[in-house]
Amino acid sequence: GGRAPPAVRASVDTDPREEARVAGDARRVPVLIIPGFLSSASEYEGMADALRRFDASADVSIVPLRTADWYPTLAGGDFRLILDAVDAAATEALRRSGCSPDDKTLRVVGHSAGGWLARTWLGSAPYRGRVYGGARKTTLLLTLGTPHYSLERYPFGRVPEKLFDDDDAGVGRLDDEKKNLKNKNADDDTPWTASRAAQSTLALTNFRYPGAFEAGVRYVSVCGRGVVGSTPRGWLARTLGLEKNDQKEKETNARFFASVVAGVSYAASCGSCDGDGDGVTPLLSAMLAGGGELVLEGVTHKPKPKVFSLYSRSSDDENENENENDDDAWYGAPRVVHEWAREVFARDE
Image (cartoon, rainbow, N blue to C red; front, side, top):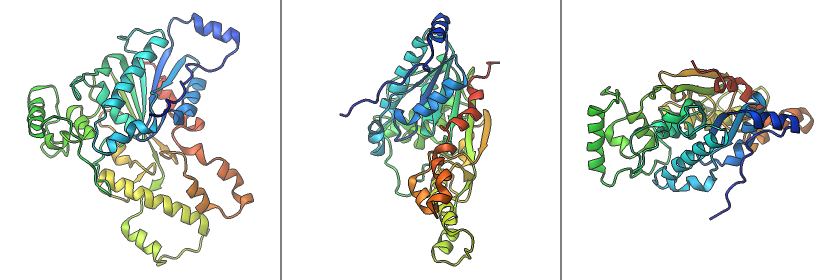
């Protein structure tokens, strides 16, 4: 149930002369944004608008997902619904931009889990009975804070996905794939084993399509830096008041709170809570092997939660400007979009 989010505009508002010019163009540049886990399309409208302003030839759309569309995956459901939505949105994006379904012109921007799911969609092996083969129509995959190499060691565990009707048969089939197909992931020490891949779409993606896998697709991994996770020892010391704290109390509390949250997320992803990253995804997990890399200083995974502002507020007057700009540091903020958008519209080699 529920009502689908409103359709995302295909182009910026323009005067009649500009509309006539756009209408006369044979083709525009199709860009598709894939939302992150538990996120809806509406959260990315600002990002889409910033991309349109960056390049007037861009035809930017967002996969029309709702937060509720992700709920089945919390209980071990697969990602077929999400991938079907990505595939339909990609076909529509090409059609609307004047490109044929087989034109290799699509630029895909995947935020967080949307990035590694895009890799699944690019692939040519069947996923729950369907082959997507998105690489045939895609020229670029740019990921924003995507935990490509997450170990999925969540604090409260995870429900295994049932990606094959019979787990043992699925493991055997994946082992055969590793031996017989072009999958070059032959490292015996890799965590992306057939047994894990049979129960996790992320692990399956790394098993089948390691690194910048698809020929003809340019991969760029973007990740923020500046939120260092807190170690358990640091957390305990701070909580018990064993560390000296004679600086701005409110500001320090906010940073420490963000550090603790980041540490939990980083540990789930790469096994260590004291790395650096965007507050959710550590740099160690975000950079896809074999692709381009872009590190953005001070950029965070999502807009700053209001609770961080409450922790850091010392007076309304002192923090008025800062609180107004709480959303200015995440990947979708206009000034941040301009830092990575040039990679989206770079000419293909």
